[in-house]
Image (cartoon, rainbow, N blue to C red):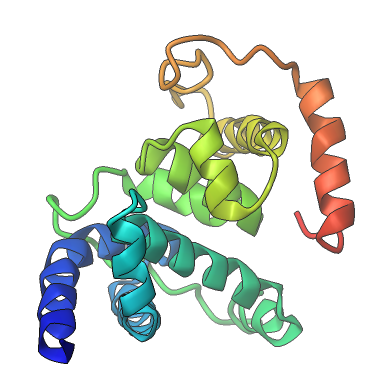
Length: 207
């Protein structure tokens, strides 16, 4: 039984690593950090593998579990005070490290867009990566992050605005038209902002 579990995990890991690695790089812009994140995620998934595999039999795909595990861990990590201090940037007089150039086939995102995504608050960054890199629906993003659909829409709206401001006039927003859902979002930013504030109150005010 144990050998069968380990064999099934090995098959899953081999298939999942490329996508997890791309997602981790899009978050961190550092391939070494991305590899560490993937390793940590796989260790967490392995510890829960018997349950994850049982859930797979009733329709919950193991990759979705791994992806959620990675992003929730990253959000939690970024909220820690010591992590925020560590991430504030270089010391005075130091140049910021240049992002590593990824292989062309490893990520479909431009370096400018990756740099802009890295400036977003952690929840907006997670929403952007799930919604537009992983191409999840609003409902799927909400479930993965444990927030409301209204908050997903609000965070996506604010993220697009921030990306447009960061990237300038040449930025082309392919996501504001609702193409991923086949229709425009019916709720306005003002209504989703209200839901966002309610979610922040429940989660300690984190963006």
